[in-house]
Picture 1 (spheres, rainbow, N blue to C red):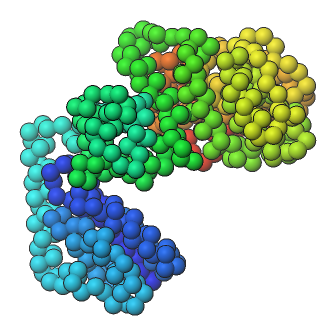
Picture 2 (picture 1 turned 90 degrees about the vertical axis):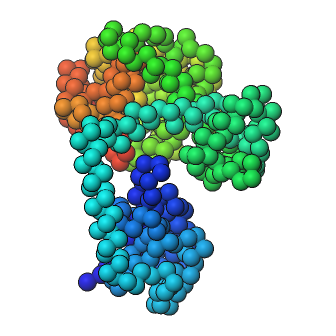
Picture 3 (picture 1 turned 180 degrees about the vertical axis):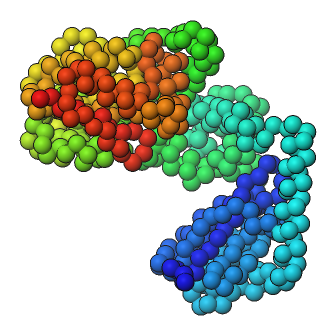
Length: 453
């Protein structure tokens, strides 16, 4: 019994460089083209496409198997995709020139490659060779650093519709020699394509990394480039137990602040609809957005409830950015910015929602308890505090992003960290909140919610 007329398994196994595999022969491009062609012919409900590990025919990839017939295709190229979709999936006739028809030879090749792989694995184990996945993880910073440098230089914008190394270097005012090295490295990562000495942006880099693109993420990603320098101090931070080069946001340069707020705005704009639905904006009359940054969450709440009024509390360096976004949203009459420091002083009063996103991880446990006590005083009876953050499981080893983010706070703050659900629940209870609950959201963050009696 098959839920689809055809089920296609496409090998996209990635192996170390120099080892034959489907991914090295362009399986990703074939897979993308296959899905695009199936969609173009309206066959999504008839043809299910699934990626899989090695099919054992590594020297003849890209490989795919089509069920229920069990047709094995090898050496599939981009030029073959249209024919496979038309002939096999629409007309029911397999493309014979690509079909492996000698089943005995097919089985023998698969078994031979399997035995060779097991033998190589045993030899590496006996020799004490570092496993590939560990080695790749240790050296992963090299790829990251290459991309971050390209973003800092705005290299992808300079590549534009196509340029050689000398042209890019002239536009960036960088060394032609080193610029070519970087361009070649980015091409090896498939972020650029190099044809006859001319470099071209990939569809992804053209969309997300170039000035003028609607989806340009570079301004936000520059925050990650800034984090690089902090993370280089991690060893010293582990020895010291805190950041060794700490300063507050207000004391950092304009470039750092702009990149940080851009990154937060991009994240908030993506997650705001999830939060608004989970919190039920229709029940909110007056909210305080503590450390509200660009105002993305306050704007989303105000757009969801025309009767809602929001105050954003943040530093003077952030206020102009928030005002710009509020003006663009046409909400200056209902969303206000109040300059202040969330670490000290009263937060106001008369609110039925106090919202904090990505705030608690910057603070120490004592600071969080103090902040939540002040949130309690700012709320009317029946009001709620809503914390959005990376919430760890009780043993603090998952989710992985949250566990790693704790180190991000170690290198960048005096006492910040990622915190667990039990820790948040304890602080909320001690601050006077009842009906404490943990609401899970799709993605990397969740909500901790408490009510004032």
